[in-house]
Image 1 (tube, rainbow over the protein chains, first blue to last red):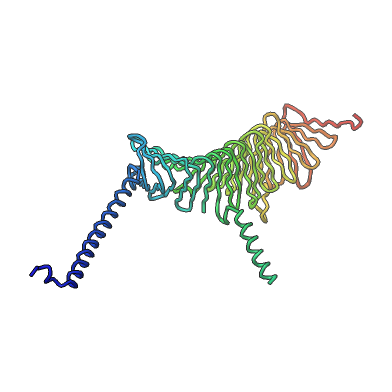
Image 2 (image 1 turned 180 degrees about the vertical axis):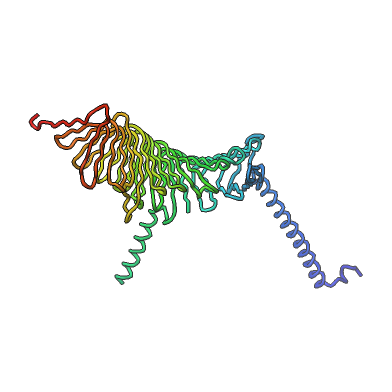
Length: 149
Length: 257
C-alpha cells in the first residue's frame, strides 16, 4: 500500500496549516525586526548634527562656565554652531539662548538670538550676547531689560 | 446676572490694565537700547544708550550709565551716568539734571556735573555750570563753578563756590551753615537787600551773614560799601565797617535819576 494513502487526511491538513502558520509567524517576526532596524538607521541618518548634545566649559578667573546644547555643528575647525536650548551655567548665573556660535580656541561665545540671563535676584532679557575674556565680560546686545528684585 | 457680568468685565479690565505694567512693586527695572556690558571681575556693568532705571523710590535716565556692584548685579553700590542725565526721587524731594550724575548709594552722596546742572532738594534749588554735591547722610552740600546759585524761600545766592550744612526739621531741610566765595564778587539777595562781597559766612546760631572784602550792601536807594559787613536776618539790620586803609562809603541814589 502506498504510504501516502495511509496518512490521515485530517492530520495532514492540521500539520500543513500549522507549518504554514509557523512560516508566516517567522516571516512576520523577521519582517518586524527588520523594520525596527531600518527606522533606527533612518533616525541616525536624519539627525544632521555633527555633535549630539555637545558639552564645553570655559574656565574663568573665579568660576567655571559649563555650556550645553541639543545639537552642535562645526562651522570651522574652531567655531561650532550650538543649536536649541543652549545653556551657559556657572555657580552664579544661567544664560539660555538658541543658536550660539562658540569659538573653542578663543573661548568666545556669541549669539544674535533672544537670550535670557538669570542670577540671584536678577534677570536679563536681551537681543543677543557675547561672552569674552574667559567669561569675565558678558555683553548683552540690543534692546535689553534688566530686572532686579 | 448683571452683577456676574460686571464682575467678569472688571476682572478682564483689571487683567488688561495690569499686563501693561511691566515693573512689579519693589522691583528695579533697567532698560537700554544698546545693551548691557557686564565686567564680572571688575564688578561693574555698563548700560548703553537711552538708559532708564526705574524703581519705587527713584527714576534715572541717561545716555550711558556705569553701575558698580558689591557681590552680584543686584547689589548696586553706586551709579555714574554720562550724557543728558536726569534724577527724580519724588519720595525724598530730590530732582536733578546734568551732563553727569554720580549716586553713591551707601554714603548717600549725589554729585551733578556739567553746564546748566541743577539739583533740587525740596524747596532748596541748586544750579551750577561746574558741580553740585550733596551728602544726604552727613547733611552737607557744595557747589563749585561759574554761575553757581542756591535759592530757597529766603535767600538767592550767586557765587563761584557755595558750601553749607543743612538739617532736617519736621521733614523739611533747612540751611544751618553757609560759606560763599567768589573772587569776582558773590551776590546774596534777600527780600529787600542785595549784598556783594568776596566771601560770606552764615550761621543759623547767630542768624548773621558776615561779609568779607569789597563789601557792598544795596537797600533801596542806599548803597553802602566797605571791607567788612554783617546782616542780621532776624532783625533785618546791617552794619558795614572799614579797615584802616579805606573808609565806609554811603551813596544814596536819586530816585529821579
